[in-house]
Image 1 (cartoon, rainbow, N blue to C red):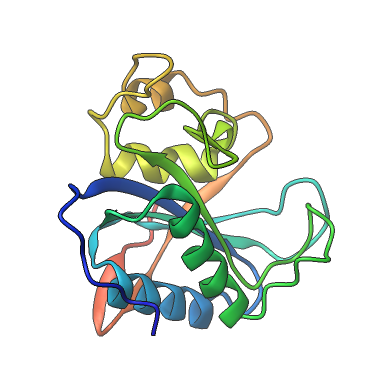
Image 2: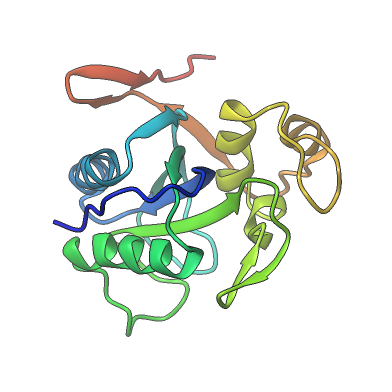
Length: 183
């Protein structure tokens, strides 16, 4: 158990993305369970399916969640890496490859810059539809700390190009957290 006693420092609001294409449903459940147990989950976006980018592989499932923590960023990253390791993340695999779990810190409060070797906000927010759309869904009025625009504004201006994604039905702990879109 990696749970720590809370210190008196204030809690930060943290947006985290989860993505995987190996045993996707099972691994999302495990990752959400771990995040809930360790930090508590404030919000969960819909779950989006997308084609793999940069390689030929199974489709990915992606979502964004918010958690709160007072851990320093490097300690938070270590906890998230342990969660990935529990789900058998292969760190020797190429960057663009199949994944059992990928958990990334997107942003912490309104921080901008390099913190403990982690650049915040994460650049993928403005590059990948599978990150920006679920973030804009749960934090539409939050402003990107570098651009000053809301995530909703960024999504409205986003050029989806060859990226495609769609909501899927997804259940966690007996509750439907995501509903498939019908066109």
